[in-house]
Amino acid sequence: MHIIALGVGKGVDVYLFLIGMMVLAELARVQGLFDWLAARAAMLARGSATRLFALVYGVGVVVTIFLSNDATAVVLTPAVAAVTRAAKVQQPLPYLYICAFVANAASFVLPISNPANLVVYGAGLPPLLKWIPAFALPSLLSVGITFGVLRWRQRGALRQSVAEEVQVPALSRPGKAAAAGIVVTSLLLMAASGLGYRLGLPTCAAGIVTLGGVCFMLRSSPWPYLRAVSWGVIALVAFLFVLVELLDRWGVIRAAGEFVHAYSERSMAVTAVASGAAVAVVSNVINNLPAGLMAGTLVHVAALGPRIAAALLIGVDLGPNLSVSGSLATLLWLAALRREGIRANSWDFFKVGLWVMPPALLGALAGLWMM
Image (cartoon, rainbow, N blue to C red; front, side, top):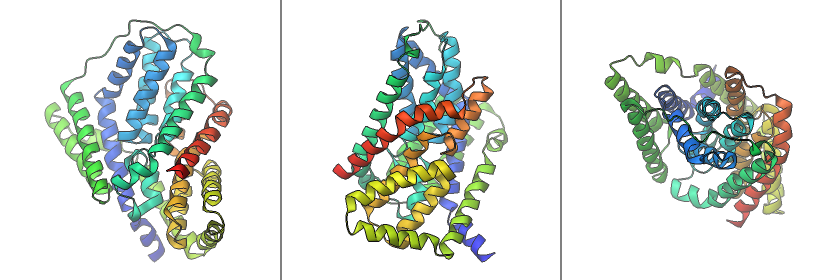
């Protein structure tokens, strides 16, 4: 029981972060904010399939950076599906692939872009002013290479026609309030990160305050929004913390850490790239949440340097672009597609991911070393 309590207790900051982000994402979904953003992107495309692709990708990058990759996969996916129907797109899958791939490719631009970032670094999460210089070039290369390869792979489908006139839904006052809450939350989190504070409590508090403001405007109960939080995911993350605590007690992680530390003394560059690539593969086998927890514990117990820690984080965040089993966000994306009646199987995703993920991963790791 002591190990269980200790493992669960180590994840409190992550639970609070996830709850806050899920509340904000549900507010944005119900109040039509993401539908409005996607429809605006479709209007700006002016009948061009390739321009629509770039605009949807841009929206996905922004949503991932400031609201986390899970929000991009869960909330933006049905919005993009609705826009492709409104724009009379015959092959919507190229646009929907964006929601899955950009959710991971842009997930280390900021500490708040992926809950896995909190998992890997834990209490040692670098302040924002250290995070941005360290991950700026890797993020730029990850986002840019993912866009280029995905755009090239879908070049045939992007010759299709797109309607020039797309109806843009009106954004209500509660929708604008939700948008303002998200902006304020992002600014608050960047300030907290810059000061070196943990992000869980500010995120949860900002989500609850925004929820209270929207419910006050609507004269409605907050319970439907709170029920929409994936409490099962919170329980799963808690279980993973306990699992990693057990592996740490058994000495498995320490042995792996000593192995990596020994090789890092021979060649830091080779060890960093190999570690990032290895954890990327492992993330696709066991999912990136447990992989991230193990990587974070590995960094702590073996006192690995910041360069290897950053390489491990890139592997945890970007590696899942190879398969649908790699991250929770991608699994949720697949479930969202099925709810929309759009067929996309694991093999199709893997065939695209096999082209998209490796060059983006190598580019991001090379960018990390250049920084």
